[in-house]
Figure 1 (cartoon, rainbow, N blue to C red):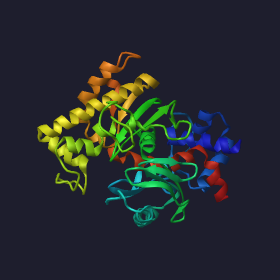
Figure 2: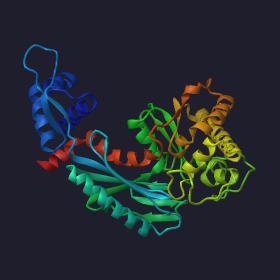
Figure 3: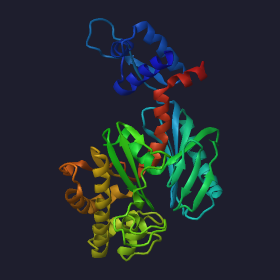
Figure 4: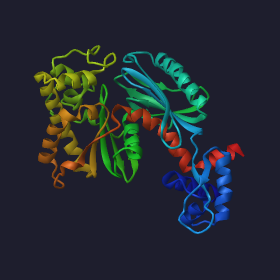
Length: 390
């Protein structure tokens, strides 16, 4: 019961703070004395701090304002992409306080080598976070592939060339978990973006990933592998796919398919400000300049995406569809064709154009979601940290 009450107090401060102890008591239905006792535990664990007097509009001396601590426990997010490595630390309020990203080709690279370089990158980020008074108590690694989150094993990450890779359970002294990058992008959208309680989130890097959020929670499927939209057939007798099937969405809206259709090789980008292999920036740069082959390639990709997404909408009837990752940054050119296909193919209900949303998080989503997983766990069960600090 006390752990539940700790979560109620911390959740109230997180959602509505700054609040006085009396305000918290009124919101959650506990006595002020009980709240004061719980606040002492939360403060000792570094989860809340008291500022100056909180204005309350009532007669009498106002109590001190409680807010989430900007120091102490935090979340570490890590990401291994096909063409980059990244790490960040977020505080309890969800603000990114330290981050780093490097462009590096990981396709076909040994997992141990990629993890070693990621560890070195994370070490610098942890040092920066530590200087700001932050102490990550958990880490999650975003991977573009099928992940058994319970065992911390990458079952198959085709675009990395990984199969049955066991990940370490600890990184630089921080407990480490793993999750599919598309799932983490959707969770970031749910917690910090425009995502409602029910939506389909679709994103792209080298491959195409999707995630389904139902009633505010991630739908994983029977084995945890739900969301493989990239291998939904959009042309049943179409191009052969590396998965063994034909006509998969990835063959029409994935990185290599779009670049090939645009007549552009996969390789270093010459777009202003783009890093090595930044195909998104390159396509956006060329499309902004009116390059007809690129515009046609994005039109084709949008049509294929719209076809696949219409099937998802007809099947699960989500409140909205969210374009994330690379698709968010290419939304200007993808949206018209996606809207056209959704309007023509969604039959379970009249399709509303505003049901298609472009994420403001863009390619930051998976890394941010990875870091936020730990923060959300702390907010849901602060009693675990409070007991450790007692």
